[in-house]
Image 1 (cartoon, rainbow, N blue to C red):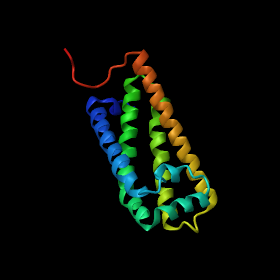
Image 2: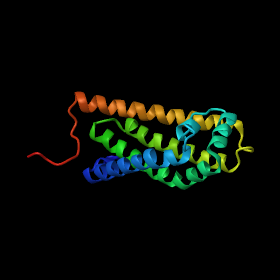
Image 3: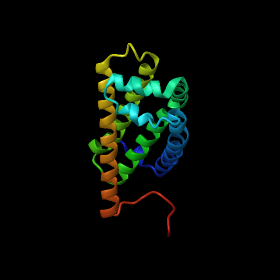
Image 4: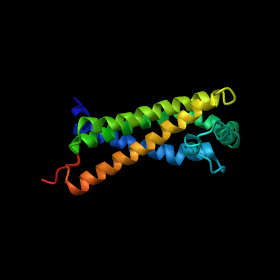
Length: 170
């Protein structure tokens, strides 16, 4: 069912896209958004209260919010790339289908979180506080899933000698 994600070309392409988009988000988007404020995207994701989120937006100012809107498409592409990449690695590691689905669940949570942030940026005063709290819960779940998946993969690759796609040495 999910074997398509473990094809060598898919794993390599999604891995390269994940790396390139990671570099873009971390080294271009994040500094452009937070400027000298010290409050980046993760700060907003894990703010938990609408008031704290509004404080972050106030610190960003119109420039930071404009940069956020400018770069959000890259974050959507990033979540797609890392979901496919991690799922492919999980299949190659011999993970059960339910475990493989965790990579896609993390990406789905990220997409919902991004969409909620766009709505929050558009109407920070009218955005319901409970939805902002849910947004931060979803973000926390995404980060926990990512850590779990990466830990699982590290364990499998270190201790089970899983085949990593790449050039053959034969």
